[in-house]
Length: 122
Length: 108
Image (cartoon, rainbow over all chains, first blue to last red; front, side, top):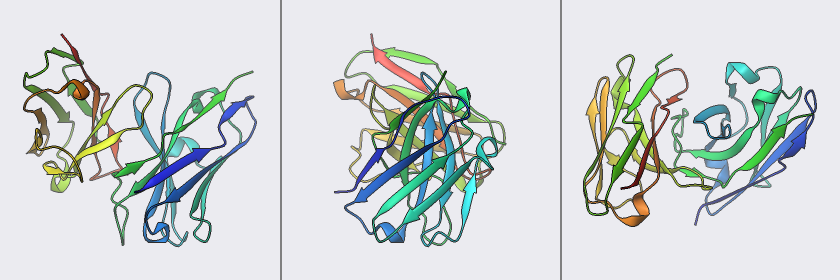
């Protein structure tokens, strides 16, 4: 059974930093593109970033470029999102999601974690 | 960027009824790269349909997707109690994908 379990969310002040983690199991983690997708409270879904199987390619939505860094550790079956210079508008539930694409990312997501809430507020 | 519009915003139906949800794109979605997700309160989204009409693993056949170009439809043939949720469409043919605002299907 595919499982994705996020952790690391919490309350942080504007300008602060947070590192999210996603532990994957039940599939060959190193074979898949992985993404972070977020959902602001009561709002819709927004793709944030993704990373290729070997970490050689990374892409970001414009609003987080230069502030967020996605990474992975295939030996630990883990995905990460380092978030710096956080803003109030980054407040959201952050989901780890698997992309079924192989050579290139498909940008749709066949498995999702339960999410971790990040609140940016003073 | 392709903007998706979903209608209606809320659909009030009874169990056993047929639900028809619409997703309209501001530009043609290449190769029918359109997905549908279901989200229940406090839960993660669940993939229902990809490629406009292909059901994801484990999805019951009462869920079906259709459409091409700019107009897509998700149909739930007979609503079960567990189907009352918010449904999002997503195009993934360009701009790294965009999601629609969602349609809430609630109990009449």
